[in-house]
Length: 254
Image (cartoon, rainbow, N blue to C red; front, side, top):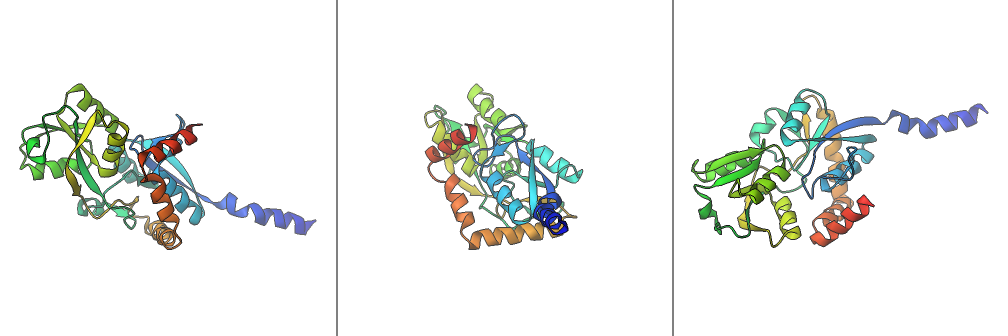
């Protein structure tokens, strides 16, 4: 009898002792983060990546929907353990936070309304450029045009796109993958302007400076995922034709 009780205890011990990681994720930033429902359940490339990492380091992922600015604030305040949201690794951010190995190249992309007179990068000068508040796109755009643009910031990406539709801005900048997602789903509404602009050293999973051990575990998981083919399979499931992504979205919502 004692042996049976010990067996049951050992069987459930790992689950009972799995650490819970509270992970800040953007509310809506396809194809990286998308809400599955109204209860902080998400899906997307970053979400699936983190779920796989959590499985490999014996942790439980608990996602918390936040704005881009809140990701940084709540990580500094200790309200979340990690942050994901196509966060570019830059020297300025590395002064305050730790980052995992980059898991994807980071690029910015300009997007205009389809009937806009803007057709090239040169046309952006003197225009109103919308960005998601807290992103590096503000600095990138100001430097690119020597400050000869008006930057208008919005808390979330959907608000930036809505401002473009409403005519409150002339053009916006977003992550390349996000821009391609919107173009694929609204080809008659938006158009890409210019080529992607490299930013930072890639997207990374962000942690506070006290989480060196956790970041080391995450890096090992990322390396193992690359070695065993899991990362490539995940990458292909999201950055295949967007029609495939929509099928995944519909499956998640069902």
